[in-house]
Image 1 (tube, rainbow, N blue to C red):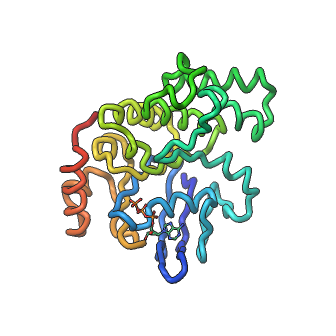
Image 2: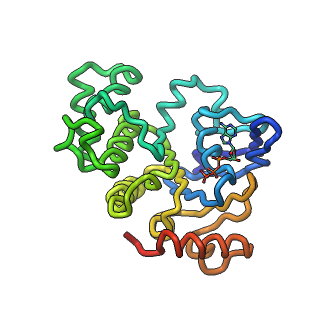
Image 3: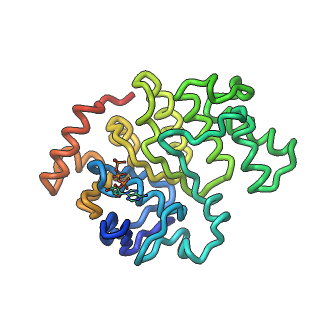
Length: 248
Ligand SMILES: Nc1ncnc2c1ncn2[C@@H]1O[C@H](COP(=O)(O)OP(=O)(O)OP(=O)(O)O)[C@@H](O)[C@H]1O
């Protein structure tokens, strides 16, 4: 069953067309991994889904309704986003970073918010660090707080924009493992990543973007073994050399 639809999406910055007619559907429970060269429009595509960036023409529908027909705050609750550089409030503890949205957006009482935030931190294996400030956490731990914060909104879909790219290599595994658990729980996920181990083991489908166009889409095993386009094959071989095909 379709949850998210991109319908002929065009987006430009000034003269530069960044998304040039993107159309595809994401099923509920699917893990869609978006790959493509730098500047191909991957981040922009994600940012359009929760209206951090507006599209020029076309439409994006969530659960059959245009994202432009929805209340913006409600949309941001339904669409969780995890950023490369965590975007945590540095003056708040891990727990406070998670309770903030629960109180302000979901209207939870203080006690309810703390209880729910503790559940979310436990889900990402960080309950013991609840009282730590971001500066006291490793990059992997910070990113897991970012995931817990997004999960606290009880989203219908989670967007991950290169969630492991800012991490030291030894910290990538703990974040990938949390993402894999979410996939196993049936969370719908749209993931921009270079982690080919994750793509091979967990993606329902890979989507290859180049220069704002959707070049090729398919199950990871087919795209890795028998891509229709030479560009896809060459790109995946290079990513695998750089970021490993090893399942972490
Ligand atoms: N706020 C902005 N203003 C102007 N141009 C932008 C803006 N954000 C992105 N761009 C341009 O849009 C194009 C696509 O950027 P985008 O970040 O979506 O690509 P990407 O595939 O995610 O790249 P990367 O892998 O390097 O993050 C790039 O040429 C970029 O310079």
